[in-house]
Image (tube, rainbow, N blue to C red):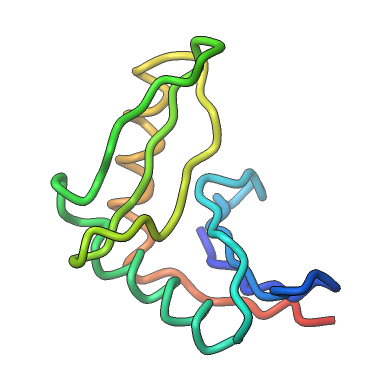
Length: 110
């Protein structure tokens, strides 16, 4: 797993995602105006992903399952991909808990 810090041409160009070793996105952030803010978001996920109370489990209107990771102050820091089952969502959460705290950060600021 790694965290990707990205820059686009958007008005708020910085964002991040956490991807597994196959490159599949597990979590993504909102867009940020500053690189530092996006970096802080990555560190917040790394810090808070170990605690069950930081996960908000959700179901979309089309029957898919996803979750948000919240920081200590209750702000949503990242949102997961959509999963077809509760079990797949739980597997993704377990993967994040096991791998995100120590994962490398790769900058893609092109």
